[in-house]
Length: 309
Ligand SMILES: NCc1[nH]cc(CCC(=O)O)c1CC(=O)O
Image 1: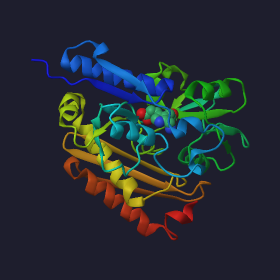
Image 2: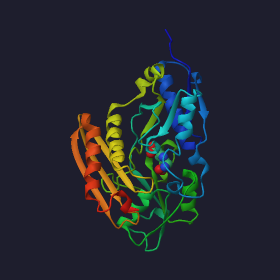
Image 3: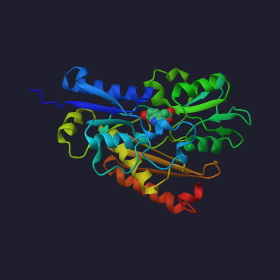
């Protein structure tokens, strides 16, 4: 008997967001042995999509990529929303829950250097373009003489700016490049341990209405438990730090079997200070491990998180 409810999938309209929504739709069709045409894709423009001329960190608060999707869920015009987990704020409206995560893609940052130049080989004064305060801080930590500049816009636009010579290099999530079929544009991959990525990077998360049991059950077969543990640690770390979008924060949990290894980093925006924490534990303790790691960093910060901006 087919009791699958009619599901409308909400997503942002960027090429990456759409690729991710299509992955979810394909997963649903496979899991329920129905055609993909059973699932409508609804494109929803978010505040974050409208702001292109300034860093999002200056645009007031969290949830810039999620608020309008939350509203559509609450209003009942979609049944689920697909997100890049790193864009999901630590606190969601009470009507919304994270249903789960697809198996995580490679979480590393890709380095795209013009002519293949590496970060270490960049000349002094070279310009690295990125919209991410974390990436800028990690670059400056390693190479204080390199300049960083704001670079927004979608993945293709950013890659073109490297080609044209407007900037010497950029960094992008390898996961995003892979989903767009552009992984071959990476000229190096940054090691997770030295350049931990943003919390949630590489994981596609799905939100739904908290009370919607039918949608909960329909989505359940898509989700990956190990990714859920990793994200529980990373999101608890972020929540413990209560970092604003203006604080460079990195965090990554690796789950193997019953074990979890966490690395977190908080930096000063100019890279002059960095605080790193490492934790090992059981995967089922993920949220405790992440929260504990966040508290340790807070204790070590001389002027709290605000002192890092
Ligand atoms: N900040 C935008 C964003 N949100 C998620 C990804 C990549 C996909 C992912 O992390 O799963 C990207 C692009 C990037 O950082 O290169």
